[in-house]
Amino acid sequence: GAPGGHAQDGGQDTSFRWQCVDQPIGKLLFRRFLEGAPEFAAAGALWSEIEAFEQCEDTEREASAKRLRSRFFTPGGSEHCSFLSAAATTPPAG
Image (cartoon, rainbow, N blue to C red; front, side, top):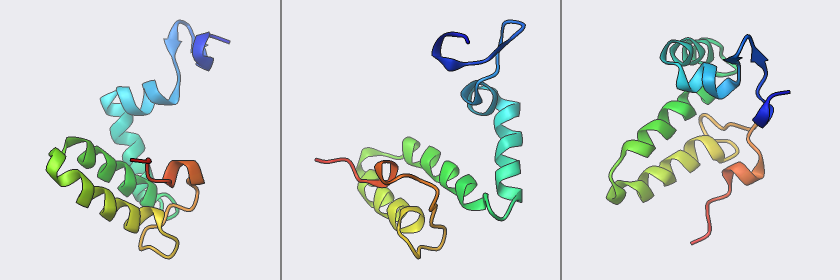
């Protein structure tokens, strides 16, 4: 395999990050796929909300993080993402 575990095909990086995050058309198509499949809609919504969180002002971050936690990370929440690991949903210390 190639460094970093990315499969190489004719010198083209085929990693998930390259195809679905770094490439605008790939990202758009993958997001549409998530949003169009009921079982993945919460994951698509979480991705959108995390991107919005990354853009928000420092003063808004704490309230935004609380909304994210209650919506996506709380069992029984409206869009609970049960596929996330405990490590992914634990608030950072401090």
